[in-house]
View 1 (tube, rainbow, N blue to C red):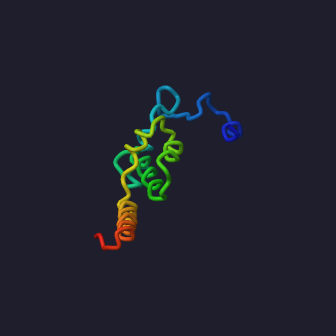
View 2: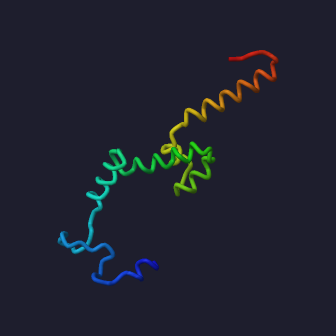
View 3: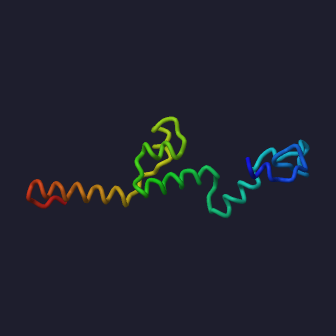
Length: 108
């Protein structure tokens, strides 16, 4: 709000546009397309999935992810979060090590 209050008022719109008939920005499609092209992605929503993947890479709990992503249910979060193969391998190596320690043999 401080930023908006500090802006010089030249229009009744927060995002005025000289080219639209309504006088304000109606759709950010052109800007989104530029952002996507620069990021090398097809859809702006891919950025959200990438963000979720980065959170997974940091071993953040699914419940903390749900809060960060502002999801109503953990199911929504699971759709965004793709499995981190490095993390899966570390977990499997740890389980294998624990099995080897318990049995005194080598499980591979």
